[in-house]
Length: 74
Image (cartoon, rainbow, N blue to C red; front, side, top):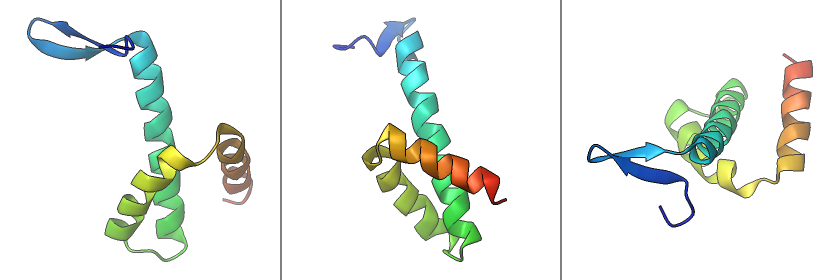
């Protein structure tokens, strides 16, 4: 709530528009990393755990380049 990413509505936490954008960005990263790792032979559980770490650590520039590469080589 401090940064305005969430607010309370009817005793529920609700994402603000900015909060939703950030959540969607992180989720997109998670899906791409998980899928890629599974495709190269990592088991699903390990891929999901690693994707959780990777989704927060990679720069926007590197993520965009990796996404373009993966999409071009599907």
